[in-house]
Amino acid sequence: NVRIRMPPTPNLDGHCGNFNGDKGDDARDMIEGRIGDFVAKADLMFDTYTPRTHGKAVSLDDCPDDQRQQAEQTCRAALDSGDRSDEERFRGCVFDVCSVGERYAAQQEVEGW
Image 1 (tube, rainbow, N blue to C red):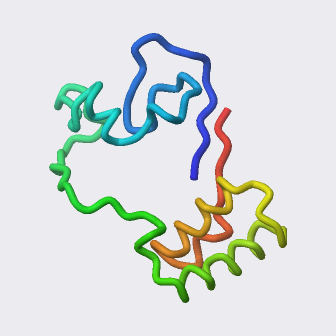
Image 2 (image 1 turned 90 degrees about the vertical axis):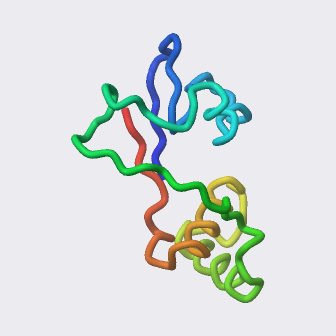
C-alpha cells in the first residue's frame, strides 16, 4: 500500500483518486465515470500500451474462511498488535495475504512526502 500526500491540485484525478480527502469518491467506477477507463496515448508514461482487461473485482468475501483466519493471524503478528485497533490497515493486510500470499503481510505501506 502506498500513501501519497500532496497539496490539492485543481482537476487532478486518476488511478489513485482525486486527492480531495474523501475516500468515498475514489472507487474505481467513480473514477472511471469522471475520467474514463483509459489514458490517452499522449499522456502515457511508457512507450508501449497494454489494453486493460475487465475482470471480476476481488474482495475479502472471495477468501475461503480457513485461509482468511490464517491471514488474520498472520496480519496480527505482522502489525505487531494482538488487537484490530487500526481496522483499515488490518483489513488491507488480510486482503493482501488472501489475494497474493503471506510475503506481503509485512509490506504495509510506504508513506510519500
